[in-house]
Image 1 (tube, rainbow, N blue to C red):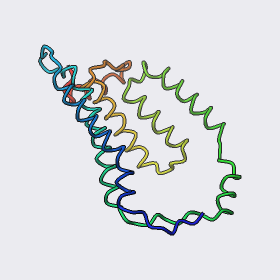
Image 2 (tube, rainbow, N blue to C red; image 1 turned 90 degrees about the vertical axis):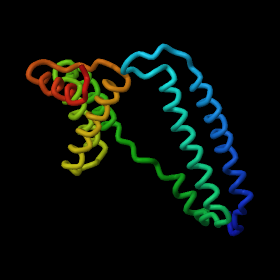
Image 3 (spheres, rainbow, N blue to C red; image 1 turned 135 degrees about the vertical axis):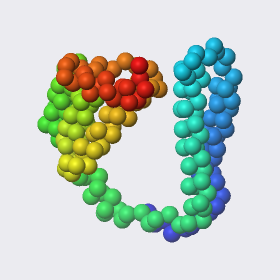
Length: 187
């Protein structure tokens, strides 16, 4: 199938229409969430915070879709691959690694078993490092840095935003957990 015809600005605007609908619905729901009545507790977010956070992400995504569709108005679509290339792509089986999937399941079980012993922070670092390694990401320093960043981000999110208590682990691992909680202002 040859697509030599240029896509018109009207086509791009039609493609942006669903994003406009999502944007309008998101703004409407945000205004409704802003009307939640609640008794403010010191240091706690209200019941409207989570819907608002999700709605802000929804509105941002809709805006991204609208802008990207409008900016690309009038540009020709890239030529489609030849029919032979499409047939070849359909006949090739995707790479599947069942052994790695089972290893990832075993690592997840090990994470759950080690969580009360090592604590959330250390367990999460080890877990994410192993999963990234299984995913063939083989740059040890980057994987280590990313694992620490992920563990800190999740710890902050759970303890400071959602107010979920996480397992600190047993001695001596709990000392690191308590130090991080103090640094994050968790009491």
